[in-house]
Figure 1 (cartoon, rainbow, N blue to C red):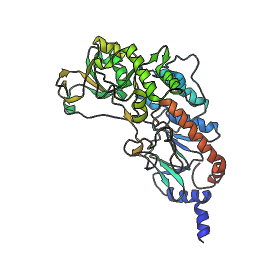
Figure 2: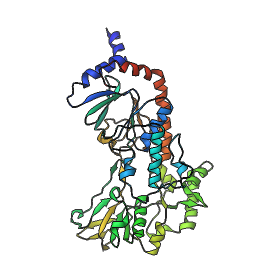
Figure 3: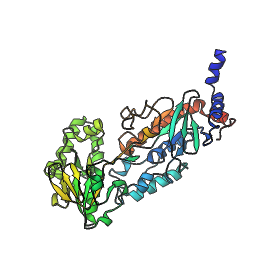
Length: 425
């Protein structure tokens, strides 16, 4: 009897029937069997994973909470945004950017590329499908992924919601007293509505720097809060992208040598940033990125505005008042609006019931790139490497190859058996 029971538990047909009997009784969910992997997120990471899987002959279902692909790029980015890295480092697997695109594509061009990518690989996400819970069912050996109305069941789950799923909004003393608008960069489109206004931008990453530049172009009076040390590098060196040059140099030299070279050339091109209130960390830019995941800022013209005085630099905020801000150095200045360029975070811990692959603290894989893409029991991650779209491409390729090896062994058989269960397909 024990031998018979053991065989039942490891038989896919038995597992699917058991799932059907335990899930279809819910009055709120109907259960859908997915033969291939379930991908959560239809941004660049989810699309890349699906395309790589399709190239391997593996079907996949993409669940997306918004009503379109790449919702972050559609709805939560500013108008003047361009890719900060050359297009060859930002293309998704199996399909390059159009030849006539500029080196640094605009937001609109990148969205066109993603739409073309989805069309080229015939990727059709299920839109308006917010995943509220996903957990592994140890009895059946399958992942159960629930939206508000449907439960999807599959042997594989690919998390592709990315590092930028939820806004990071800090709190300050007196925040409720400030009379002007306080908005995150996810709501900022352009500086047009801030013309002739004094605007404080909190956060000095690539977004904060570029928002300040955009405000200048619309005749605003921006100021920048620099809360921590940072590396600012020129976008290009010797006519070559700084990123591309770094990758080439790393083939021949260790990180610390390349960091010294980058900082030496940067000082020649953009000068000493310490004099501008932008203090460099002790670690070099590449070492800092590798160890702490902190991306250096690539200057696209903001430093010149800081030097000219068009953009003022302030330290951390101490507290807010009705129409003023007090900084930790004692200065008090009046502002009409505050823009929070404070970044994003992962939202994975809010819906994924797993403590093996992802950290509950920050929602990122516990293992660093390039080992953070694979967990246990058919769980995968794409787009959490802190290596941008280049890291996404590497992970999507690895995930697809790994799942394809399993699919060719038993995935097709389970697909046929799944058609005979009470679960929708």
